[in-house]
Every structure is written in C-alpha cells, then in structure tokens.
Amino acid sequence: MGRIPAFFRGIQPRVELSYHSRMVGCGGSWWLLVASVIFLIIPAPLLRAESAIHKLVTATSAAVSGDQSRTVFRLQLTKGVTAEVFTLARPYRVIIDLPGVGFRLSEGTGDKAQGLVKAFRYGQFAEGKARVVIDTTQPVLIEKAEMTALTAGGGIELAIMLAPTSEQSFGGGTGAPPPNRDLKPSLAPETTAATNAPASASPTRTKPVILIDPGHGGIDGGAVGSASLIEKDVVLGVAKELQKRLNGTKRYDVRMTRTTDVFVSLDRRLQMSRDQTADLFISLHADSIADPQFVQLVRGATVYTLSERASDEQARRMAEKENASDLIAGLDSSTSEDGEEVKGILIDLLKRETANFSADFSSTLVKKLKNNIQLSRDPQRSAAFKVLKQTHAPSVLLELGYMSQAEDQKLLGSPEWQRTAASSIAAAVDAFFAKRTTGAAN
Image (cartoon, rainbow, N blue to C red; front, side):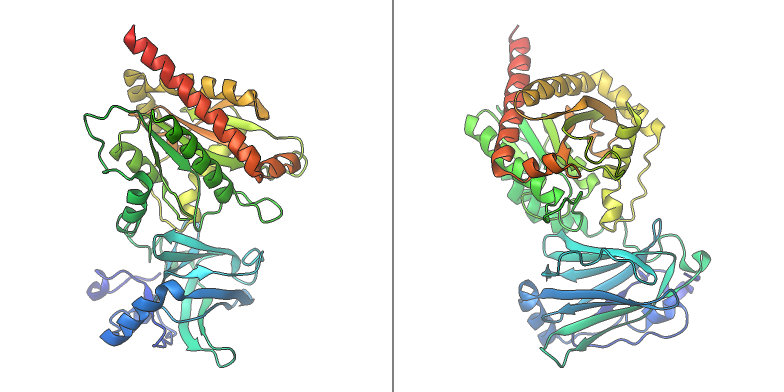
C-alpha cells in the first residue's frame, strides 16, 4: 500500500459494503478507494432491517475466477449484510467479515487455487461474526468491491476484484484491525456461557478449576480427514464428554474455552485461563501428517508439555503448526515466539513448580490413556506451544490421534471412542488431584 495522506492516517484502511449500496473502486491508490466509501451513510430503517435478518442470512456458494493479472472472488448470500473487507500481510490475505452469516457451501469449496488466490476458508470468527480468509499468492490490491442483487433465484452477490501489486505498495499488514480489536467484546457471551461463573474466581472456592480447551473452532477447522471429519468437531465432542464426566464427580469446577463452533484466539484462551485462575489446563487436538510416506505409519495419542526447545523435530513442527492458528483465522499476530520468551516463562514456571506439576500430569495422563486407547511411539513430548505458556496452571496439549491415519481417523469419529478417551482423561484428572490432596494433607 502507498503512503496514506495525513488526513486519512487516523482511519483504518478498509472497505465497508452494505447490501443496499454499491461501491465501484477507482483505479488509483487504495486510500482513494477507502475515502470514497468509509463515510457511507446508511439510513436508520435499513440498519434496523439489516440487524433483524443477520441470523437468517446464509452463504450458498463461493467461487474464484480469473488469472494472475486479475482475479474475482464471488460469494452469494440469501440476503444482504454489511461486509467489511481489508488486507493483511505475512502471509498475504484478504479478509471479509460478515455479521451473523451461516455457510452452506459444497464440500471442498475454497480448496482449489485460481489466479491470485491460493485457497480460501470460512466459518464463525466469534459470536455473531463470520469471516472469509482468502490466501493470495502475492501482495494484492482490492481494485473493486460491490454487492449486487441476483436476478435469477434472488439473493445478493458480493464480488471482490483483486489485482497484483508490489510489496512496497501493499505495506506490511496495512489494512489490519488493531490486534484482537473485535475479539474481547464478541467473545464475552461465549465466555459467560462456557464458564457459568464470573471471570475471576472466588477466593473462597473449594473445588479445583479445570479449563478444557477444544482446539481450533469456527473459521479455523484444524486438520481434515476424509468423510468430512474435521478436527474442531472431534475435539469439541471429546471436550463435552470430558466436561460431563468431570461434572458428574462433583469434585471440580469445570469450564470450557468454547462450547460451540466459534473461533477463539490463542491469546484469548490464555487470558481465560488466567482470569479464571485455572488449576489445570487441558488443550485437545487431533494431529495430521502431510508426508505421504509416513501417513499410514504414524498414529496414536501424544501428550505435549511446554519447553524452550522441542524434544524432537516432529514436536517442533507440531508446535509451529498449532501456533499458526491465529494467522489461519486472519489475525495479524505479532507476538514473539522466540526462545528467550519461552526461557523466561520456564524460569517462572520452575519457581512456582508449575512445570513439575505439568510433567506429573503428563505422566499420569499417559498411564491412563494407554489402558484404553492407542498411543504414539513416543507419547510424551515437549515444544514451545503458545497455548501452554502459563505460569499459574499446570497445562498439557493432548493430540488424540492422527486424522491422516485411516484407523485413527475411524476411531476419532466414533462417539464410543470419544467417550472412552474422555473417560481416560477424567481418570487422569482424578489421580492427579488425589495425589496433590494427599500430599497437602501430609
């Protein structure tokens, strides 16, 4: 992106479109395009009408056409909404935010590369907010964006025309909203529903707080298996079953980072754990292997703890992939992931003995899991997972199995297997806290 004149520097460079308006881009600089629409005035009656239909709007198809010189993304909606469009760098992406839109698209939509678009994904970004993330092959300029009524079958089409531009013209991350700007307000209802408790724990509480973290969610689906099996659905199923079993003991205050198919950033997951002063944090995931020669050879559950240096190359790659969750969902994350940061956290962990408790729970969890489900050849590993950077609570990340391996995939999708896995995790929680209670009594 080129330099923005001083008059416009306080304005987020983004495009806002509504279903009752049409915007035609100008051929000049990006800021000129923004200047033509940023002050768009929408009549109050139309705003009220739009608000009332948000929950009824569905995206029915999405497609990409064109070539490297000009590419068009088209999204068909049953009704119009206000769309917010902006760009991000590192990697290059175009972000489309839509209020309250559901997706009913064909399987495989967004997987195919076309022109300037490598792929695109979609899903719930937060409560009442949907997002489409378009990965581009290079820096792009939003040359034109418009919403028009469809004559055949009704509905609205959102069309965004992309043209190539230089890295210097694009700018680093220009067009991004401030980090997590929309996250906290929109996630507040989800947090309340998940915890059924105030954000800060009561000082007189008598039960340990267990925070279960179903990985991924919403626009970030995680690993995908055949037969439409998606990681975010598998781990949410296991998490709900685990919550049910732990609540049944009446010994714990069990909470969840998410209870629905909604995106929760890694920073927000950590913040929830801090706010609720969790006594144990369990993050659930399901792995995948990209290398075809190892796909059917690698299977089983693995428990990860935090470390400055990964225990092996596979653990390092896994942490790198899981830490990219925010980028996948279209967040411009600038949080440092270097070794010095982890080293400082580990020193604090050791001072509080939290690292030792994490290692202890990891060992207990592996013992309970091996009695009922398949484990990987090296079931205890460590790496710099961002979601495990917690100084207040013992924390582990459990990869339940490999979505890429045929037998594991079959089991991961089985409700019976999910109940068995949850039962094993619950048994580990019981054993872990029984040991700590006994130690305190002595």
